[in-house]
Every structure is written in C-alpha cells, then in structure tokens.
Image (tube, rainbow, N blue to C red; front, side, top):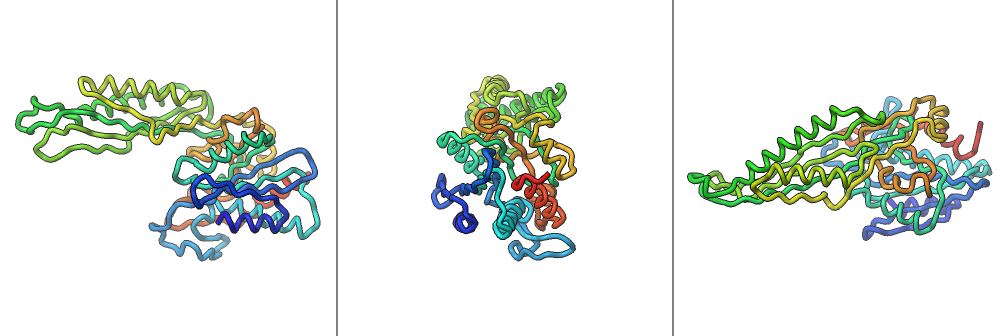
Length: 352
C-alpha cells in the first residue's frame, strides 16, 4: 500500500520519502509544492481493522444506492481517494496548488499505539518543519472535530499466596485483593464523572475491562491480573493520573502487594483547541457543518506536543460516519465524498 501510494504521488509531481519505523511498513511523506508559504498536512492512516467478521465482500468496492462498500471505504481511505483524485484533476487542468501540501500515509493507527503518527511527529521535529495545519483524516461527516480525549492503560498484578481452599487462612487470595482494587476503581470513575467538565470533550472515565486469575477450583489464587483503561480529559496530566491510580490500587490491595504499570508504556494527553480557531471555522463554513468533539481517539494525540510550536492548528476531518467504521459491512456515502472534494478543492486552490 505504501509503495503504491508513493508511486502514485511521484507520478503527480510529488517529492516522496518512505520512512520505515516498523520493518516492511513505512510511513509515506509526499510533498506537493504550492505557490504560497503556507503548508497544509493531511494525515491518512493506511491500515484498517481486520475482515474476519465481515459479512460483505471486503475488497470489491461496489457501488449501490449511492454508497461505496468495502473495508477501509470510510475508515479511512475516503480522504486519501478524494485528495488523490483532486490532485489528478488539478494537474490535468494545469492549475497550481496555493499552499504546499504534505500528504502523509501513516501506519499502525488501528492497533500498535499510533506508531506511525508518533514517528511522523519525530520526523517533523527532526526536519524542523512548520506546518500551518494538520488535518487528521477520520470519518466526521465533514464536521471539523477540534477535541477528543487521550488515554492510558493500566496493568495491575496482585501477588498472593497459594494454599488449599479448605484452609484459606493459610493463603492470601489475590482475586479477593483484585476485587478490592476494582471496587476502588469503580468509585474513582463515579467521582471523575461527577466533577464539572472543563471543556465540551467532557470528563475522563475509568473502566476495568479485563481480569484473569486462579489456579484451580480448590486452590487459593496466588496471583491475579486486571486491566483498566483511563480516558484523559483536556487539562489532565496522564502521569499525574497514573500516580493517583497506582496509589489507589496499592492501598486497596493491602495487605497484598500490587504492581501497577502503564500498558506498553504508552500514554496520550487529550487533544483540544478552541472551536473558533481559523481552520475549524473555515472547514465548518465550507462544509456547512458545526464544530464537534469526538468520543474516539485519533492520530491527533501524537501531535499535541507540537501544537502551538511547529503545528499551528490540528483538526480531525473527513467524509462519512464513524458509525460505519469497523463493522461487518463498511460503506461511505458518495455525497460525503463529493462534499469533502469541494472542501479540499477550496483549501488547495484557495477559492473563495
């Protein structure tokens, strides 16, 4: 996919770099020169979720009832197709881009901790680039999304002592300690969501989503592990949040020992900027949509640390609905592709 995109962009006059972070899976950076000093970056993740649960043929690209079907049609090849088609049209017309365009095909958005996006952020730093706008391609019904939560995962391991279940007093039950940790985390979640939300993105949340423990029906368990996910709201520091949740787990587990780690060592501050920023306002006007915030996470989380320095604005924007993503039948409404095409034509050609 990366090689195909690189060749397609070279054929349209771009200077292209393949930047390999994961073996055999490079990011693609395609630079199309414009006539102004402004630089717009469009970041499209090239990976999709799997097809095992699909009830439709995943790759036939059929068109029915004004919709294009197939895996990735909405999440998120739609923007890539729109921009490439527009670039072909501009070249055929002999027109010139007004802003410089940096078209990015990034890897590992769906799983892997936004590896491609964080690698691209490092590339921006290394090249000392200044980007006026970064548009993160996701299905937003062509509404500019100006904020969403970050997050971190917690891996908690409880250490106990095995014993025969007929004499539980000779052991230390790790599952019972895990239950106390879960109770503490449920209470913490209730406290979090009861607090006033500082932005339209809302408050953080805390959910225990996995638990595993036990050696046998007649053995007091000597260990138990659980996983919890903490969504990070704007204004929250992920490491401060982690320290608090670690202490909650350690205290609740007593007298047993609790080990608490951040899953994969990855954590993400929330993405948020004002709804009246220049790019949000422009996209909203062009698409005749209202600015929104999202419940899901995107590659924007990798660029938050650059916002205000090497990146002036970040917006999540694209055709189609997130409700169609990851489903057994994925599709995008062609009218949404048309709308995205009109918006990008204005952005790239500077039309009034």
